[in-house]
Length: 385
Ligand SMILES: [Ca+2]
Image 1 (spheres, protein in one colour):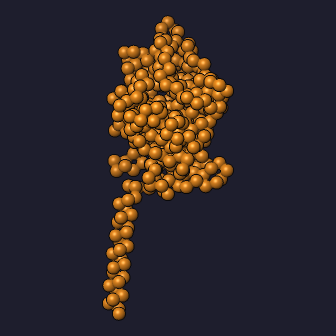
Image 2 (spheres, protein in one colour):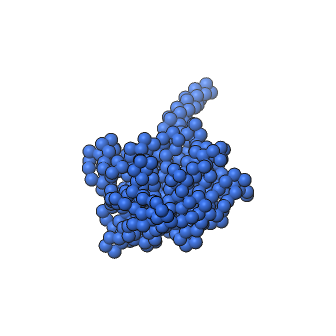
Image 3 (cartoon, helix red, strand yellow):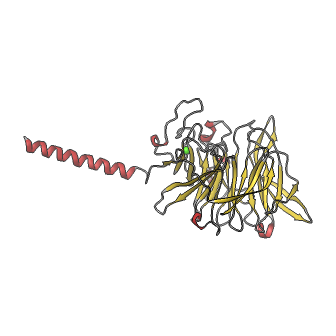
């Protein structure tokens, strides 16, 4: 009897072990860390220099000659010297400046050195609201003046909206052949799962806006042909790391800000799953309940409200090499995320600066540029102490 019981319990233990091994094999490499509760550190590791001031700025692009292009949401574009001298760039298209809609990202074309081309994303007035558009133009600057020439809209959203978050962040593949654009759900969550709507997607296109033949749904045509990934909420950060991997962050609703590794054809879950809950407090199933949907590699509850992201590759802060620097609107500061060789993603540091941070960029000399958010927002330069 005793030996029988032992045999039975031995069989049970082996069955349990087998179950655990199967579960481990099926589980993701590592459950995502919640970095939300991690406190900001007491001291800053850098000196902060205020260089210039802007009205509702949105994005920074760094020119090879160390100057900057800075957008302001109401529809202004500035060419800015590293010391803060500002020249208004003429010829910016009309924007629908409402809520979080307006003039958004600015990015240099991979061919900028020879063509002078840049890209602007903006919500253009249409109907009673606006549609997200992507414009390619040539930056012409000389004699203290600057203007956009040869303007061409290369992509436009079909259905207008009156508000919500447009996404609108631009990134280029490391080989310089493809452009990626985030499109927010504009507070219509169900559109993020609608394959025929641009909202809640990350798009991939050629530099002229045409469909690359190797996009996951290229053969389907229409909106699906441009879609690289879906199920996104409000992606205000998009950047390639040094290994050529594409990362995006997005704001969760109440909790559940996400940092995602973007892979072609994958569904990132919004609004079917989220590690946050509805603003009303109504729960949403967690990412863990749907292993068929791509889970974030790192998340924040409570939220940081991430905005802007740059991978640090400069010389002034060697300890930050390979890190992602992410601005925080709610966090009122900057977060540094590190990536282990084993696929581990973790928040390494969080600095409280006392102001909402809208965008982050790495300067030509390895300093870090931050732009604050709001009507009197400062351009900040971070250098080693
Ligand atoms: Ca998600």
